[in-house]
Structure formats: C-alpha cells, structure tokens
Image (cartoon, rainbow, N blue to C red):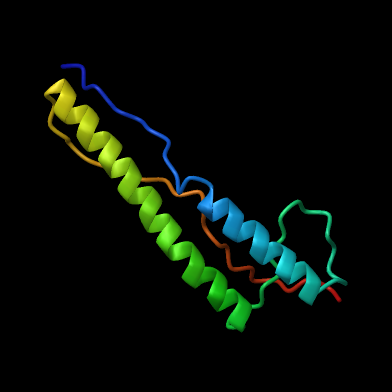
Length: 105
C-alpha cells in the first residue's frame, strides 16, 4: 500500500462566530430569564423567532468565511508541497442545533 499524506487544519472565523454566539446568548438570556442559566452559552432562541433568524443570518457568513479560510490554507500548502488534493472533508463546530424538546417553564 502506498502511503497517502493527509493535511489536517483547524481554521475558523477568527472569533467572529464566538462573538456572535455570545452576544445572541446574552440577548436570549435576557428574553428568557426563567430558563436554567447553568449551561455556559445557552442559546434559548425559539425557532422561527426574529432573534433566532437574526442569529442564523449572522452565523452563516462566519461559517462561509471559516470554510474559505481552510480552503486557502490547504491550497497554499498543497501547492508549496507540489501535491494534488485528493479530497476534502470538513467538520464544522459552529452549528446551531435545533432542540426537539422544550424546556420546562
């Protein structure tokens, strides 16, 4: 078997996603103060609400920026090394998760 080099990189939105999530979480905590605040960055934005839609509109460009940043890193490294890209797999961590169970209260 011929060894196949792999390039792994971690690149993000340069803290833009974190800042958006933090600001939106603080706003959501103010909107819903009775919901348990123990999780560090709870979202508490109800699906379809204006704050939830605003959050998604803000996070989508941050995600695209992070993806483009990783692509640029890989392109520059593979060109410098004289390699050809065989494939790409991305794993995004800045995802908004839709809960199926509503919290009590």
